[in-house]
Image (cartoon, rainbow, N blue to C red; front, top):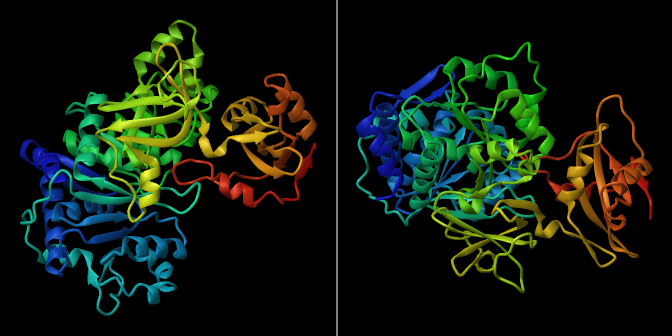
Length: 521
């Protein structure tokens, strides 16, 4: 059986006394972790919940969020992991869409719940994490665990049963609930363990949100492999480095911007990172110069991964041996690639009129395999559009070189059509990032009566520097065709970034009336 229950069961059988999770001063062995998840699952069923009902949790990364990936699905229920950065109306939208029957909430989020509580009549049970005064009719998380039976529930989930609704980040619109099965999660644990060649000496670290695939995959890897996983509630570069040194961390997953933070950290103040051997990063395209600097600073320990919520983890990865061989051959272009197909996944780049993969043809990336979610919850048309004939169409544009390496060109929806020509924002963004005065940059298309859309750059300057649109234009003209050069520029303090490092381009479009604007139309 390829379920979360069997995944935990195998580690419980072989490594019962090994440490499973560490968060601050708290730590649980696999035996203790399993007992707590069994108790919580039984407690939820004793409240009257039935197989298939949804249970949501709102908390930062914690042992409780990690437990929820196993306690809820292993009782035949469906987990809904909420993004703790969401505003109250956004939380309400997801709770309503999933029609959750119970909500587990950490006490620091109670204020955020107050404004929407009157709209949550469909929730039958509220469960509080923490020791604050218990609202009337609510249950306390630890009390439920203490009073429930410490054995696996009688409800036996199957591999194809739904285990969770993982909501997309909503960078292009309303978040959609991806229907993730037990088999999907089992694939994540098994494939991560194999791809990373895990041994009993390994230790993982969760640096990114557990509600997101990038954090979840580290948890699944640790539980499947029977090794300790350290949980960071939130990212902090120095905290990360101290934890790596303290626990001799060997592996984990970073959001792409974290790679830059590590390269910028003082060498003199940097704790030892010698234990690290395979550190994945994902969530946003990487600037090749940053990737190369990270390798020069820390060694060839980084693995670039590309995936989506719908694929419950990686689609393809750039393996260390590929990077090493390419750099030996003097090929730094490889640092722009996201690699080749991940374990048990098939990847193709296809066009609308030529659904056959071909070298260097730009097309949409589609994928099939063990990680593909069942579709979107309560969204039939969107499911039929994205999940077709066994393939998931990612909405990402890419190309494949003659060696089979995949390169992300950008989002299909982000392509700018200006004067009947196609402009791929990612191409221009990579060029802008090489300018010494530019710290960060994003490119979008804005409506224009003359051109249809105009190429527009949003630029964050490095401290103490200045730049004009004319200088940006001159710099870009040295590298790309004239129609790709920005005709408008906004100079802003920060780019809107999601919790996984993706630039929220839909928000940029809402900000284009900013006063710091230059035009060249």
